[in-house]
Length: 291
Image (cartoon, rainbow, N blue to C red):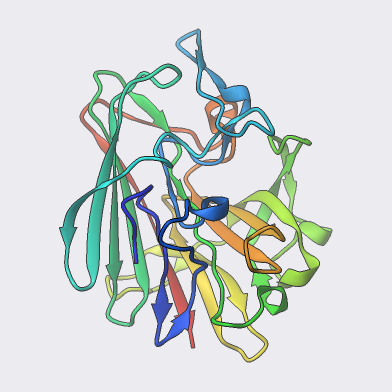
């Protein structure tokens, strides 16, 4: 199930097994569950960045830390463009405004493949007369049915992690080692994380019957061997891992967030990309499972 608000992935199940966290009909997505992120993902420090030598000031949408968080469309209703039994396409416009003087459209295409896996394509189109900066992302929370998330094992094949300050702004990167190394799998109950990773181990994997694009999987595995994973193609070389004990009704919530750039990329340049006038840029990711 997807929603007009933020084009969010509200629920996803396969063979009767719930694979994402969800929320009620009249709720705002708690902890940003399932929302799409554009034209930036994660945080921009103090809501400020520089464009052609001029400081841009965005609205502060994370008051506790003083940042602009998760783009311009998290409280926007998307228009439904197309719908079939196995797919849906939605689109919303971000108009020029203080802090982001560009006119862009964000389209989200959801589709189920023949095996019941979920495929998501996000496309940003620039209707401005100047190149526009962007970082695309998404905020799905994964689970394996009724298995308590604290009992799952989390594996993320990333060699590099970002070191954040007390306001969760990356200041440098370093090898993912020790407690930060998720390549061998860590029990979710041992973790509290809000950290970005890169250096992902992309490989050719046929995940949807459309050839073998290079992709990478971050996986949650239950004690009984069932698993769910986030896959992402090379268009998004970053993943943010958020393991929290504040998700409503759950001892632990696990968000695996595919992103085309790092937090605060509008200032650091880490993964920041630009889309030219009249052009489009896309990222592709999805959710698979072994049940």
